[in-house]
Length: 380
Image 1: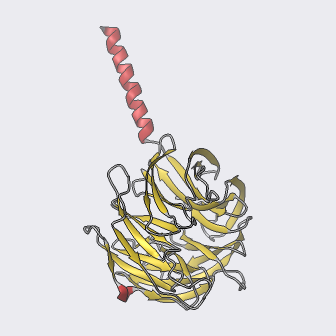
Image 2: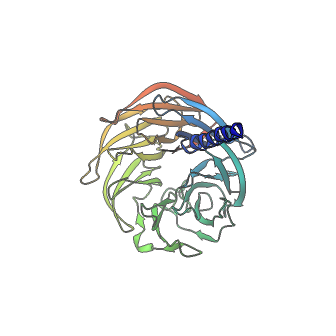
Image 3: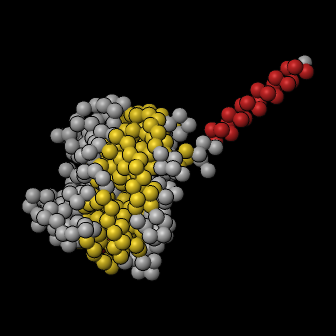
């Protein structure tokens, strides 16, 4: 009887030790979306990231997925949602994956029609109950509700845009390039490259169709600018948009859904014949803004004035690769990782917390046509 009691205690200790290990899984994961050349293949790559050294270790991949060009992580970290069948003629879908933060494995849940061709950006409401998608070629946005297990229902809301602008090759019609929630998730902003607008909607999570037009709050950008990606300051009432066609960053004061222009500043080191501004992010401390510049293949570095939100150029960093479509700053703010799509690399830079400047670490990984980077820390 005594032996049984000791055995039982040991079993319980092992059990709770296992639970504790799972609950204290302090891992930062890097998720990489890619282009698979239009074929169902390994499309999303998962790496464990060491936030002390910048080292990356491959953990898993999502199999049999086509062109998952943009991905996002749900607020609770349990699910990954991806734009899939991107740039496939007449196609377009959004796919849900379950993510096990203990094993690092991705499991496909289901896929829904995106409501239009060439989905390029997905965002998840803070409740986890809605996924919003932007279709670039179709020029529309779609909204999906989710189920408890992370699966997507068919889209319940589809909003089509029809405007155009001055660049007849690139702006012949609406081209939605991002779908971004306000900090309180009560508004959504859709940079429309084709129409030179940042389209604004109220977001009412109590409605089946949560997007409510707020046309009076939408912003007309400079003709030919081509607004692309958009981000909010983590602590202040400022917002910033990278304009693809002008290679410029537009800065805004933000309050209650309203954007007021405060500055426009060139992102490139020098003017280009053809600009191709891509991605934009702010350091976790809110002191520095970064933007990726294709053609020139640089990351521009700006300090942010905490009082008025204006940017001041600090410098440019080569990405040591071609076509830096997307980049990410790790949760600690110590590192910045760049996806060079055309040279099939993800390059790790160390970030100077005082100056904002970047230094190549010598760490990089080879990934086929990386187009999107997302990062999340799990555990405490």
